[in-house]
Image (cartoon, rainbow, N blue to C red; front, side, top):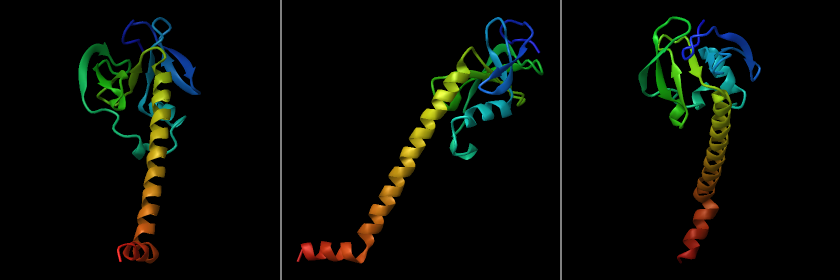
Length: 145
């Protein structure tokens, strides 16, 4: 496989305990679909369904997929300010040097936000339950008598 940017042979590498193909020249990395999911799962424990949309729209580039040679498409990763490229034929994702670290950072942030939302929803549900209880409604009625 060749680097989409440098056209040099990609070399096997380990990034965050995941075997990927990396460019020795530009330090970019090729992640297949499962490898990107595995990377995200390093820091995100709520499952695939809770991660949100990965790609909404993509723009063609002149870079080619290392596996099939089709043109890669650039997209914004999960609505964040991180742009990466993907093969429309589902072969994988091209990440530039250290963008895998940025994916981990964003997924950590996403998990914290999701935890905060779940806690807030639980507290709101408990508040509504207390408000609907007979004792609360009785106290409220007594207040206006």
